[in-house]
Length: 106
Image (cartoon, rainbow, N blue to C red; front, side, top):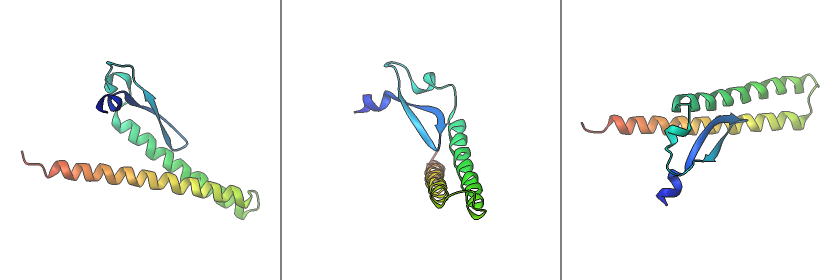
């Protein structure tokens, strides 16, 4: 089971709020396959969530003006909500990991 986990890498391309997982060739480490670091990956995730919220806001304003349908407004708001919940979950996990590391005895 550990071998199957080792053979999965994270592709830092964030498309519409989702992170793509790509297989890693056997024998290569994840660090060798990714030119980006963890901070860039998280930054991309949070930028994606921010863009989703901005899009939902613009679509909502367009809906008020009568330029967007109710369905478009609901889809944009639901997408923003999902992206924001994902970003908050990741943030909570990072903070929990930091707190756990800070409690370790040296």
